[in-house]
Length: 435
Image (cartoon, rainbow, N blue to C red; front, top):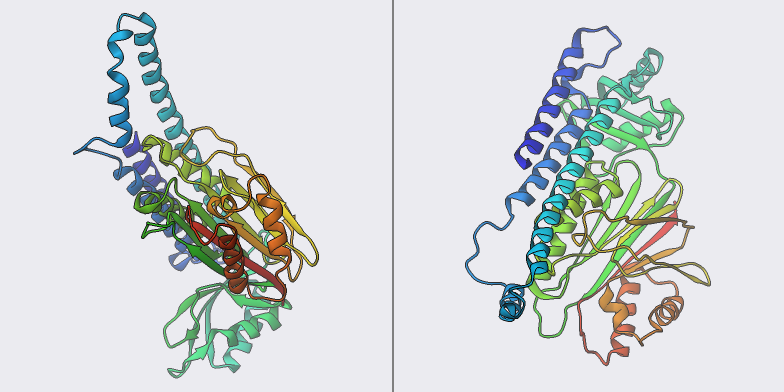
């Protein structure tokens, strides 16, 4: 079944490539598909599925020694003769096995459903991109030529729900090297809208034609910082995090806490963060990414192994922030003179196949801070007063950078714990400001 899943994804992507190539001869206004900008997105999608397939390839194959859980199971089974004659014992074993098979089928079915949804969405997006109208094309070509930049092709996204997006295939004249920002300045004038190259695009144009994606400039900017402490007697933290800027003007913070501490916990949370980063960078929603990762972890689950997922998605156009939590600690929002708390009771990923991950949204204003923490931070504070104490600590932070705020918060928390780290601790802080 897993092989069929991988083959199905490859065949679907292949068929989409055929659609792209067959569109070349339709009519003059049709996009020239040999360098269609969506080819990169399809390639990213393929890499995401390969990453997911790699997760399944790492499923346990052979086992050289017993795990602690299995040792405990053997100890319990020593009591077996006392109830070996009980008919219910055999019935229970058959039910456990059948339920596990059903759970695995649900996991694979959910993966296939998500693949179908993602690929169908990509197929729709292929037709949202068209050649820039002749009037704008001529004006843009003329203005760029004055900057010694040659324009070969120009596309625009037609989806009215999205912010302005333009793809330009450019090169310079006379072997010059010219900043991409010069092209963005010209494009902003022609389109009467502030435009900027997407994150991680080329900074310099040269004599070779290259396609650059420009987006409507965002309203807000953000900075982040992190502070970490590893559990006493351990050399590796079980917490992992990632921060990434998406091309649609969103800034994403991900934090994961592996169960326990040390290398096994680190490997679990690192696996979750890597998959989250891969899926989110490919354009998948946070809900879809989390569900697919949860299914993968359920299929390869070992007893007593799971990880929390904590995601914050900041829209840098509107200031709206969306939260998704799966077994994660509370997140704190510092405003001028108050601190808001975002909590959830959802299970960690890998514990159950069908889990409803709670999501919520908050409007952020210029000067607000997001403070994300792992359980080890709150557990170090006075029992039953964890969130109230953390609120007071954050509220007393004045005019500091996100990195400095994270450092000071962790110092205050360790003070409550008498400088003893009884668990891994991570504080991830992000601030948002209007440009």
